[in-house]
Amino acid sequence: MTSDPFASSDPPAFDAPPHPQSGSVPPPQSAVKFTKAAAMWGSLAFGFLVLIVLLIFIAQNTESTPLHFLAWEWTLPLGVSILFAAVAGGLLTFAVGAVRIFQLRRAAKKNLKAGLPPVT
Image 1 (cartoon, rainbow, N blue to C red):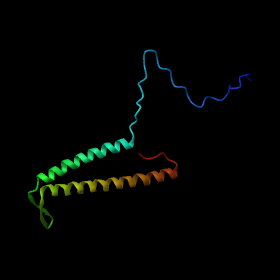
Image 2: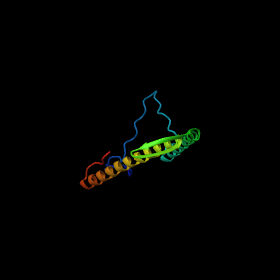
Image 3: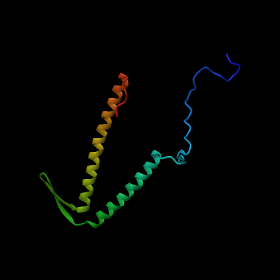
Image 4: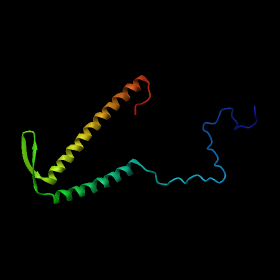
């Protein structure tokens, strides 16, 4: 037994940070952290720039172009037809991503029930 009332035989709950070696200074910590909200605002600004460029492209490409798909044929302005193609590509990408997210959630639920580590 010891006479120190604060002494304990239990190990400390956390390890003390290592002392930096002489001559090496730890890098300063940034006061502002990168957050999901910051990433969202950056993506939103980039999306608006792409939208502006796309609108300019559509406004400059107004000549009609014949389109053929299977047995159908119609004419649309070139810019509008490219816009439709871009939207269709985005919807296809979204659908494939949604299927993949569904697969990962289902695998994660199975692994959680079985006590296995999560799937990445």
